[in-house]
Image (cartoon, rainbow, N blue to C red):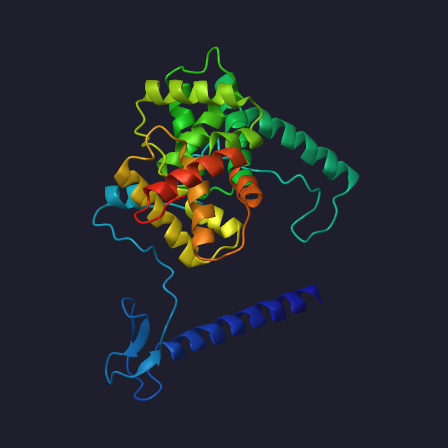
Length: 324
């Protein structure tokens, strides 16, 4: 009986293989002239070599998007998985074990499996941070990501801040300074370098260290690493302030015009760029008949109303034909 079943099973497998080969043969011949079918990978088409009939169009190219002309170049360009990132201490090359005790189908694991996964997580964490330098880097990059998220900074700022911190760690700039202080100064520097600056007060609001320490560490890091950080331009703050106050594009453009005029007259020299931007936004709102208050601008820009009033008068005095 078992022999008969085995024979029957082998026959069915043989028949199945024959049917699949027949189907393959069918797909390799032209349905019109029974000619040979070839695949044009460049155009993503399967065409008949004899009559030119397009058998299949828009086929998926499963090959790489790059070309290699020798084995060495092929090995250099070949890659799998997600791209590396400087925002993780191991550049994203390690394995992460999910904290949820569930399998691939979303079902809860049993008690023994949960215990096993907990043990694997523990050893995985130990292997990921093998020395004090990696533990330092992991903590700092976590702080950078937290502060950048709180300030709404883009990914390129996080990458730049992570690279700056790695350089500071490699050049041994951390002894005598807190991890939080250096990581905060890296975020502040990266934001200014990317053209999306945040004021020291805004950075201090999301940091775990005092404003004075951030400023002191920032100056030290910029000097030692020879970073090219340009002075913050007041115009860079205007779009964010105008957006938070729900002002029109006309007001935003008017504020930028006031700031450009102030720079031409030299009014901006020695003054806080945040204060100038806040005052320009307030002045532009009044000039375009849009409703806003000094208190609202002060809250958005994190600048005192006295500073706004002082800068506001100076901007209007610098504007041709306007007297405060």
